[in-house]
Length: 291
Image 1 (cartoon, helix red, strand yellow):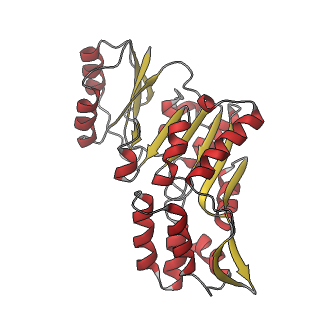
Image 2: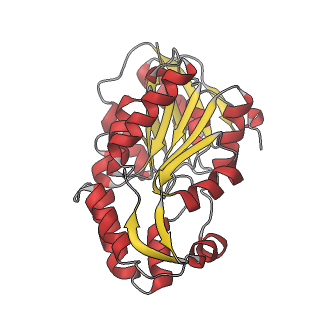
């Protein structure tokens, strides 16, 4: 048995009950359950429809995300989340670079790396090199003035924690940011790269080993082993090319507002919903959310 989930942006909910009923009838689905009025609904389906992706394309134009997944085991026991452009709305290194006056060059490299056009580790070292000499106090300034949280993140972490799930922030960004974000959002733990600072200034180096795509997979394996879980118990979310191996290994891998090359390789794509979509995918209704 499968579950079909339809959802839209909580900021402008426009999920039409007639659309849900029409799709359910066309595919021979079971009774629809509304997880949030005008925002999210689901229904069971005995088998995968042959025209799923054609319908997905049509609904995307209507501002609706469509997800199909196995019904069994969809409520997960661990959340593994990317940070930049996933749990927060920015790329921290781009914001540091803008503060340092080299924003354009760094943002260009970031975009190419996140779309899989450049080696992540090499691109990270090149970008950090452009920050050499920046006063380390800039990190705190950027945190206060430039970093905002992705909508739905607090509810996602709090609700999964309340249900007994372990929550991990795993970032190719930097510990100075990840520590603050993890604390504010309530993650159990975090992993990230460390900027090298000497005499109060960035040296332009990243401490080894660099946490990239392979390290995210390693984190998934190490933490699940420690908690006596399996990869099938994990809900992973990210947006960049360095997240793809992690998303592929997790029981549920979600490409959230992802780069085109990333979304193309993921079966679960959230382009209109926010982070609360990850709760709807697990069958939580809006009135079960913890804030």
